[in-house]
Amino acid sequence: MASKFFVVGVALLDLLAFILAIVAEQRRSKATVQQDPNNGDLYCSYDADVSTSYGIVALVFLLLSQAIIMVLSRCFCCGRPLPPGKHRAWSGICFIACWITFVIAEICLLAASVRNARHTKYFVQDGQLSCEALRKGVFAAAAAFIFFTAILSELHYLLYSRAKNNFPGSSQGHSIGMTSF
Image 1 (cartoon, rainbow, N blue to C red):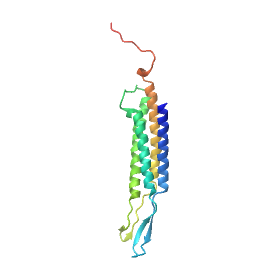
Image 2: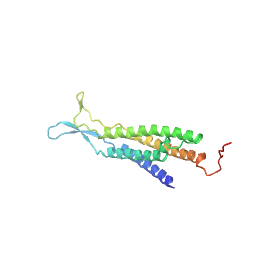
Image 3: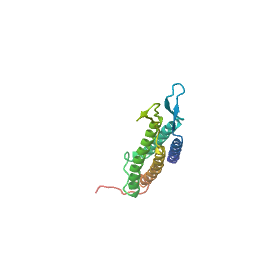
Image 4: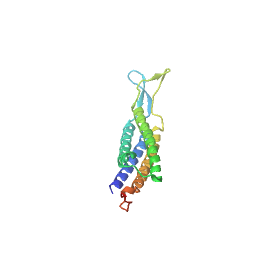
Protein backbone atom coordinates (compact mmCIF):
# COMPACT_ATOMS: atom_id res chain seq x y z
CA MET A 1 0.00 0.00 0.00
CA ALA A 2 2.77 2.42 0.91
CA SER A 3 4.65 1.80 -2.32
CA LYS A 4 1.50 2.60 -4.35
CA PHE A 5 1.26 5.87 -2.44
CA PHE A 6 4.88 6.68 -3.25
CA VAL A 7 4.50 5.72 -6.92
CA VAL A 8 1.48 8.01 -7.26
CA GLY A 9 3.42 10.75 -5.45
CA VAL A 10 6.36 10.32 -7.81
CA ALA A 11 4.04 10.46 -10.82
CA LEU A 12 2.53 13.70 -9.49
CA LEU A 13 5.97 15.24 -8.90
CA ASP A 14 7.00 14.29 -12.44
CA LEU A 15 3.78 15.73 -13.84
CA LEU A 16 4.29 18.99 -11.95
CA ALA A 17 7.90 19.20 -13.14
CA PHE A 18 6.73 18.62 -16.73
CA ILE A 19 4.02 21.29 -16.50
CA LEU A 20 6.40 23.80 -14.92
CA ALA A 21 8.97 23.23 -17.66
CA ILE A 22 6.32 23.86 -20.34
CA VAL A 23 5.15 27.01 -18.55
CA ALA A 24 8.76 28.17 -18.21
CA GLU A 25 9.20 27.76 -21.96
CA GLN A 26 6.13 29.89 -22.59
CA ARG A 27 7.17 32.58 -20.10
CA ARG A 28 10.91 32.85 -20.79
CA SER A 29 12.35 36.35 -20.85
CA LYS A 30 12.26 38.34 -24.05
CA ALA A 31 14.31 41.46 -24.68
CA THR A 32 13.52 44.69 -26.47
CA VAL A 33 15.83 47.60 -27.22
CA GLN A 34 14.79 50.79 -25.42
CA GLN A 35 16.21 54.30 -25.41
CA ASP A 36 17.12 55.93 -22.11
CA PRO A 37 15.18 59.25 -21.92
CA ASN A 38 17.86 60.89 -19.75
CA ASN A 39 20.94 60.45 -21.94
CA GLY A 40 19.65 58.82 -25.13
CA ASP A 41 21.64 55.58 -24.69
CA LEU A 42 20.14 52.36 -25.95
CA TYR A 43 19.65 49.53 -23.49
CA CYS A 44 17.95 46.15 -23.34
CA SER A 45 14.68 45.87 -21.48
CA TYR A 46 13.59 42.41 -20.33
CA ASP A 47 10.10 41.37 -19.38
CA ALA A 48 9.27 39.28 -16.30
CA ASP A 49 11.79 36.71 -15.14
CA VAL A 50 9.31 34.19 -13.74
CA SER A 51 10.50 31.32 -15.95
CA THR A 52 13.73 31.07 -13.99
CA SER A 53 11.71 30.28 -10.86
CA TYR A 54 9.56 27.80 -12.74
CA GLY A 55 12.67 26.07 -14.07
CA ILE A 56 14.27 25.79 -10.63
CA VAL A 57 11.07 24.45 -9.05
CA ALA A 58 10.76 21.90 -11.87
CA LEU A 59 14.38 20.91 -11.25
CA VAL A 60 13.66 20.36 -7.53
CA PHE A 61 10.48 18.36 -8.22
CA LEU A 62 12.31 16.12 -10.68
CA LEU A 63 15.16 15.66 -8.22
CA LEU A 64 12.70 14.67 -5.47
CA SER A 65 10.90 12.17 -7.68
CA GLN A 66 14.17 10.57 -8.77
CA ALA A 67 15.36 10.37 -5.15
CA ILE A 68 12.12 8.70 -4.04
CA ILE A 69 12.28 6.09 -6.82
CA MET A 70 15.93 5.36 -6.04
CA VAL A 71 15.18 4.95 -2.32
CA LEU A 72 12.24 2.65 -3.09
CA SER A 73 14.32 0.50 -5.44
CA ARG A 74 17.42 0.75 -3.24
CA CYS A 75 19.22 2.33 -6.17
CA PHE A 76 19.13 -1.09 -7.86
CA CYS A 77 22.52 -1.98 -6.41
CA CYS A 78 22.00 -2.07 -2.64
CA GLY A 79 20.22 -4.78 -0.72
CA ARG A 80 19.64 -8.38 -1.73
CA PRO A 81 20.43 -9.26 -5.33
CA LEU A 82 17.52 -9.85 -7.64
CA PRO A 83 17.09 -13.25 -9.26
CA PRO A 84 18.19 -13.52 -12.89
CA GLY A 85 15.42 -13.09 -15.39
CA LYS A 86 13.77 -10.76 -17.82
CA HIS A 87 12.33 -8.46 -15.12
CA ARG A 88 15.77 -7.82 -13.63
CA ALA A 89 17.32 -7.28 -17.07
CA TRP A 90 14.65 -4.80 -18.19
CA SER A 91 14.73 -3.09 -14.81
CA GLY A 92 18.49 -2.59 -15.22
CA ILE A 93 18.04 -1.17 -18.71
CA CYS A 94 15.33 1.21 -17.50
CA PHE A 95 17.51 2.16 -14.51
CA ILE A 96 20.41 3.21 -16.74
CA ALA A 97 18.16 4.95 -19.25
CA CYS A 98 16.23 6.84 -16.56
CA TRP A 99 19.49 8.14 -15.06
CA ILE A 100 20.69 9.31 -18.48
CA THR A 101 17.43 11.15 -19.23
CA PHE A 102 17.34 12.51 -15.66
CA VAL A 103 20.82 14.02 -15.96
CA ILE A 104 20.00 15.55 -19.35
CA ALA A 105 16.73 17.02 -18.03
CA GLU A 106 18.45 18.48 -14.95
CA ILE A 107 21.23 19.99 -17.07
CA CYS A 108 18.69 21.54 -19.45
CA LEU A 109 16.63 22.97 -16.58
CA LEU A 110 19.64 24.34 -14.75
CA ALA A 111 21.30 25.80 -17.84
CA ALA A 112 18.06 27.33 -19.09
CA SER A 113 17.25 28.85 -15.70
CA VAL A 114 20.72 30.33 -15.31
CA ARG A 115 20.81 31.63 -18.89
CA ASN A 116 17.31 33.07 -18.57
CA ALA A 117 18.27 34.90 -15.36
CA ARG A 118 21.39 36.44 -16.93
CA HIS A 119 20.50 39.77 -18.46
CA THR A 120 22.87 42.26 -20.01
CA LYS A 121 21.94 45.91 -19.82
CA TYR A 122 24.54 47.37 -22.16
CA PHE A 123 26.24 44.83 -24.38
CA VAL A 124 27.67 46.26 -27.58
CA GLN A 125 28.98 43.80 -30.15
CA ASP A 126 30.47 45.06 -33.43
CA GLY A 127 28.93 48.49 -32.85
CA GLN A 128 25.45 47.01 -32.43
CA LEU A 129 23.52 46.63 -29.20
CA SER A 130 22.94 42.94 -28.56
CA CYS A 131 20.16 41.81 -26.21
CA GLU A 132 20.95 38.25 -25.20
CA ALA A 133 18.05 35.98 -24.34
CA LEU A 134 17.48 32.28 -23.87
CA ARG A 135 17.03 30.34 -27.09
CA LYS A 136 13.60 28.99 -27.78
CA GLY A 137 13.16 25.32 -26.95
CA VAL A 138 15.61 24.74 -24.08
CA PHE A 139 12.88 24.44 -21.44
CA ALA A 140 10.84 22.40 -23.93
CA ALA A 141 13.76 19.98 -24.35
CA ALA A 142 13.92 19.70 -20.57
CA ALA A 143 10.18 18.95 -20.50
CA ALA A 144 10.66 16.17 -23.06
CA PHE A 145 13.43 14.59 -21.00
CA ILE A 146 11.30 14.96 -17.84
CA PHE A 147 8.60 12.99 -19.63
CA PHE A 148 11.05 10.25 -20.63
CA THR A 149 12.51 10.18 -17.11
CA ALA A 150 9.05 9.79 -15.61
CA ILE A 151 8.17 6.86 -17.86
CA LEU A 152 11.52 5.12 -17.43
CA SER A 153 11.66 5.54 -13.65
CA GLU A 154 8.13 4.21 -13.22
CA LEU A 155 8.95 1.27 -15.50
CA HIS A 156 12.16 0.65 -13.56
CA TYR A 157 10.31 0.52 -10.26
CA LEU A 158 7.51 -1.68 -11.66
CA LEU A 159 10.00 -4.17 -13.12
CA TYR A 160 12.16 -4.02 -9.99
CA SER A 161 9.12 -4.83 -7.85
CA ARG A 162 8.19 -7.77 -10.05
CA ALA A 163 11.72 -9.13 -9.95
CA LYS A 164 11.88 -8.63 -6.19
CA ASN A 165 8.56 -10.43 -5.63
CA ASN A 166 9.74 -13.35 -7.77
CA PHE A 167 12.72 -13.86 -5.48
CA PRO A 168 12.64 -17.46 -4.20
CA GLY A 169 13.82 -16.47 -0.71
CA SER A 170 10.93 -14.05 -0.20
CA SER A 171 8.10 -16.50 -0.90
CA GLN A 172 6.40 -18.45 1.84
CA GLY A 173 6.30 -21.63 -0.26
CA HIS A 174 8.24 -24.85 0.19
CA SER A 175 11.98 -24.93 -0.12
CA ILE A 176 14.55 -27.63 -0.49
CA GLY A 177 15.97 -28.66 2.83
CA MET A 178 19.70 -29.04 3.18
CA THR A 179 20.62 -31.99 5.39
CA SER A 180 23.90 -33.60 6.17
CA PHE A 181 24.59 -37.16 5.06
